[in-house]
Image 1 (tube, rainbow, N blue to C red):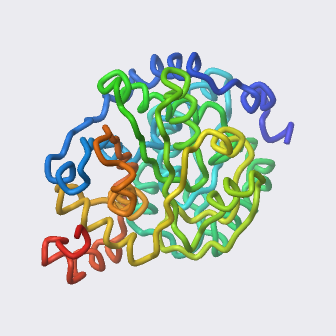
Image 2 (image 1 turned 45 degrees about the horizontal axis):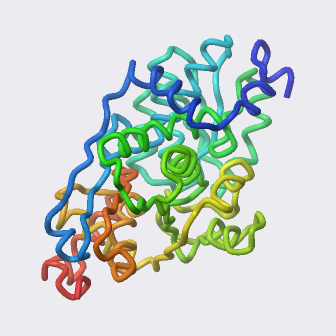
Length: 343
């Protein structure tokens, strides 16, 4: 890998600390490119859940997801170190964040995605000017081609999970949460590769360790849940349609943080994921992708646990495919106002 990262200290980047101090430093970088996203209390959701329910609208970021925060922070450091370019693999949102940040900072980017990926995300990646390569059927199979590309191009390999600067950048969103709502009791986040959960734990628990942080994952792609349950990194079947959840294993750096930092997990069926998209539209008038909307459905499943608490739901992304949207809004409960789901 030395030839693939000429001029860049890979060891320095990969071993950088993940901490609240580094999150605060990342905010100075990210503030040059991004505005804080809204944190909104929704009366309808609050009444249904029996709690004060707030939504953190990371879907309002320029790339449509929370991941742009990490992309900007990492690309800033790569630019500073004189990187020739960057290669990564993704199911979509991470790749879009790297591609967008690369365009803003003037570095070439190559993004490898699985074949038949979400067309809304692949189109957006191409629109940044990044090179898009479709390879393999899964997240992990797409990742298998990245090292060879890095060696051939002389670019930095930006791993979608094991990058401290990504996690520190994502943590800036949780700084916004606790500054605006310092007495928050519970924060619920989706989890795929794990950077969002790791960032929430790093930021929030350093300030207020008593905050409960819960994770949501697709039951058909449960690698993070099974790893957390076993306290060991595991692989698992990866069959969900929801790109933000479509990982078949846990990853070392985020897992080392969420292994003991999460207060619990909620897993959702594929049908529940579609219901979550509809619920997000019905209650917040935002059209989200399945992983981004999953926290709403998860909140309904565990509402007895949340009664009387101040709860923040992370809306992590809005880059839904046309098929996701179509299936969500044509479900019977959508036209009925989700009364059956919320009973």
